[in-house]
Image (cartoon, rainbow, N blue to C red):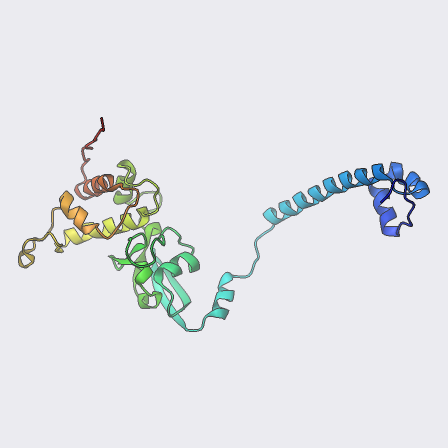
Length: 261
């Protein structure tokens, strides 16, 4: 548009200038829209658009969420549907899942229990470890359909309200983690480990499996062996062992600090 170009304005355009630039309306109708009018209009319209966007954001955040249940879209795409009923962290859960869906994906995607982590998705790192009927399993290799009638405990279900499980408290006290990605699996595995030791279950270090003691006293080597399926890429193993020892014995463990230099 050239300077003072005279154009025929529509009723909507006249209304726009009247609302935003009433003091310039007469000049615009007489001489047309010049550069000054255009820049002023862009400034005012830009501010109005920003306010409109902010108002829209406020309405989005303040309105009640009434979006359709995502499960409706999921069910529509299931080809090999099976119905499962199982207990998760003390609550009965009824779901329709694909027969090929893993327990890990069911916990994370269907139940929004994202504490259990997907590390390798090949059963090699242990980050997805959960408890089924008190036994530790790799949830990335466990089909959800096989859990019907069973009790599943993930990291979210270990604490008793605001009271942490002794293993959780020991991990915090002994800094048994760094990045924390493997920690849910480490803790679930440690909880099962202590139950196994209490039941006298054998390990690779057991010298005579025909003469298993009623209760296994966990040494550091026993803990290392029994936790070998859980990988910590940060290398927090000494603190993990100390945390498990403290939770197992109920006594504080002396820290052996190693300084370089």
